[in-house]
Image (cartoon, rainbow, N blue to C red; front, side):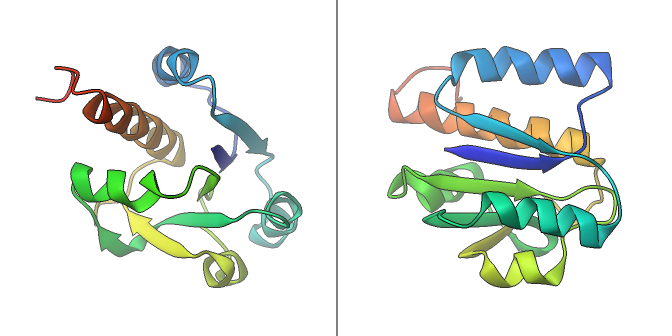
Length: 136
């Protein structure tokens, strides 16, 4: 599993929280793309998507899923790659090649927070699979 995200986690609390989950989900590769123009970000993201089998674009204008539906999205796809854009969002080219698009909310969140929400939900899905009490 991979997360491709534009920008670096700079806010201390978000960075620490993300690292907390990432340490427990060692099977997830995180690729950070430098923030730039939408076009340059898209070129860099596309370089990492060439051979990906299941791409999920995280975009505000898509379907909002509850946690259990989110878990089902990638349970059959071990090689899932999530893509989170930067402050400009994601280029249409990325959205078109994605096998699926999901939204965390109709509200707009900073892309750094979206990354934390994503990894926490992946962690939660792992705990649901294990029947662990983390997910109440």
